[in-house]
Every structure is written in C-alpha cells, then in structure tokens.
Image (cartoon, rainbow, N blue to C red; front, side, top):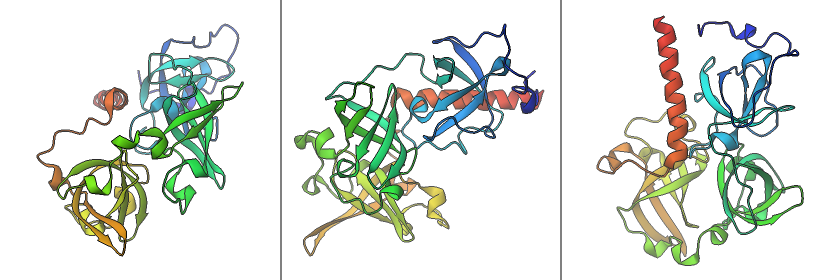
Length: 300
C-alpha cells in the first residue's frame, strides 16, 4: 500500500527461493538515506523487494547538476530503475540502455568520486578512472578539493585504457574543445548570455568559467539574485551549470577581467536552457513521478 515502514522493507534475511533482480530488468526501489553507500564515490543505497539492496551511483543518475542526494532524493520515495549488474552487488540506473565502454580518443562525461593532491578519481557510465591535477584544467587550480568536490561533473578525453578497463582522462579545455571553437576574451560582447560553470565561491561573489573556454568571470554578490542573498552557498555550489550575462569586460594591468550577472531578471526573454538534454529530462521525470506518488500516498 506504499505505507509499509522502511524498517520492514529489508529487515528480513535474503533466503533461498528469492530470485535476485535480472540485468536489464526494470524494478521499483525505495529511498532510504539511512543505509550506508556501497562505495566511496557518491551514490545512494536503495531498498529492493525480497530483502535486497541496490546501489544507484552518480554515474547512473547523470544530469547537469552536481550529484547531491539531499534535496533530490526524499526519504521514502519510490524510483523506477533498471538493473545494470546483479549479485554480489546490484547496481542500478535511470537509463534503460546499457553503457558502452570508452576507447582512447573518446570524449566522455564523468563525475568526481574523490579528489586528492594527485588528482581526481572519477566514475562514468561503464568506466572508472582518474584525471591528474595537471590535466584537470588549463587554468591554475588553487584548491583542487574545493574546486572538484565529489559529485562534480567533468568532461574529458580518454588518453589510455588499462587491461582492467580503468581510463585516464585529460579534462583540459584545450584537449576537449577544438581551438577554433574556444570562446576567447575577444569573442565576448557586453550583453552576451552564455553557459558557464561555477568554479569558486567567495563571500563577495561567485567565479564562473565559460563553457568551451579557458575564461572565467566574477559575479558580485549584488548580481547573484534579484533578492537579497544571505548565504551564497545555499544558492550556488561548485559545479553548478548556470547562464551568465556579460556585464562588462576590461583589461586591468594586462589581465582580462569579466563581470557577470546571474539575476533571473536578466534572462526573462531567454528560451529555456537546453543544456540538460534528454539525460537531465529523464532524471527530472523520475523524480517528478515520485513526487506525484508521494502526494497520492498522502491523499490516501
């Protein structure tokens, strides 16, 4: 009836006669954020029927937004998921189609699992791997852990694949985007509205890097919202994909400086950003449908 206490959904032992989920099968899972994640990389452990639990990893959720369990997966929500692998570890996905293995030269999307002084451990659909500090970006990375937190989405070029399937990525803009397609300082015009990614947050504002570019700009706290901003961190996070408006550009002692605006009022006449693609829409449909299920349960 949808009102079974969470504790009784998986409190019995998995016994003989209970068939584990089959690869490719669509199953219903229930969110229980009290369960510990299977792996160190960002993931959500969900409850399945017959006492089984499964792992929904960052790489199988996807979307343009950083992977944040809180606020995205409410306790007790039901999700329709697909089985990627079965026992001994049941891995799940929002995608019905299986992932393909990457090859050298491929441009792939991955999500940060962990960052240390050497670089980032990343996971993607159908692969795991790493990206060394020197290959994270063309610009200087002052604080790798802060700029590349767990769950941040990255795009990289596969430079090698080991016999075990582990990949090495080069996420530098110059390696991923053809030089003729890179957005330069000269290309910018005041009033331009462009996609960007939040790379750093300070008390005075947010730094954003333009997509397909090595350029960054600053949006002062007064330009972040049409409303008063009490806590920037509650409004924006590192890795957020945003639209920015170029308010000004100037050369200051040989340095390129760009001022940006993120107020919603700047984009009233803009069409809805299509950066998310089918992947984002698919996850939104899943979470939206679960919100509807929750409302139906409350009505009952």
